[in-house]
Length: 133
Image 1 (tube, one colour):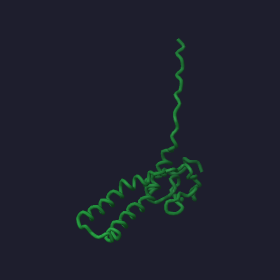
Image 2 (tube, rainbow, N blue to C red):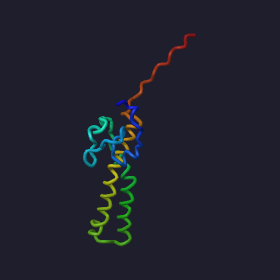
Image 3 (cartoon, rainbow, N blue to C red):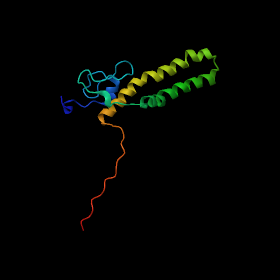
Image 4 (cartoon, helix red, strand yellow):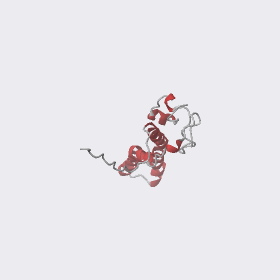
């Protein structure tokens, strides 16, 4: 099927559903964070997708800082024993940093597809034509 015959997918909706950025039906992941090699519905090859460290950065900025701030607040306010941090702060940090990774990875893959992102290349200057005068 030609590329233009698919309805445009919202990158955020693709990320929420973990579906193919082209057709919206096939699975984007094989496992929790492993990208599938291709869409099982339309056959889109996912080799173009390379979110690299982007998902981890977004998770650190949106979830890890508040979760860590909770642990610091708990320590400074109540001075609890270490086991209290093991029971409260550690699970909060782990959950807050693990669960959003799949969403952010799916979102970045969908954005790469929508904007046809490619690896950067160095542009060579193009010589200007000479004026015939």
